[in-house]
Length: 206
Image (cartoon, rainbow, N blue to C red; front, side, top):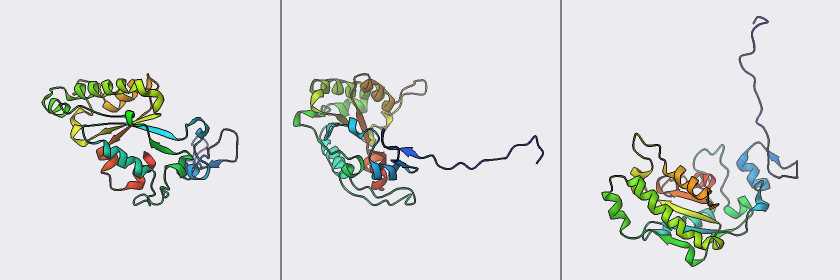
């Protein structure tokens, strides 16, 4: 190697992540292991318990309730075992409890929606409109919940994005709509959250 050449690569160690704003010793290279050891960096800013409201298709709210029960349960990893630790339950990871919000904080789309969705030439526009309308109605009960879980079944897949000439993504659209209202949401997709077989993986990526 001549003097004008540089080394082809430099090996850098994993940076240590901080898990507390004041305790400088709460450090770990592994983000999930760090959560288990120290809890989240901003846990003092999170309400306890976290009250979860739900929005689902007609007759399918129970699927979100089941998902919440899973978050509060334990799961051993069944893939990427060298990286994923055991999921010990929501409280043991985040040091706060999670429970369903009061009875008025759970909504479902009307029973006509599925028929209209199947017949719509622009299903992404129809779905976005119905979901934002339902979310707007939840604003009246905003003081009664902390986060809104929205169930997105796989049969709605054709509405996840717009047409080839449209810049539309359902996830991004709903996140932008609710962020402007200061309303945290979690989209719970059937294909990525409910039907995925490796449950510890699902819990960690939440």
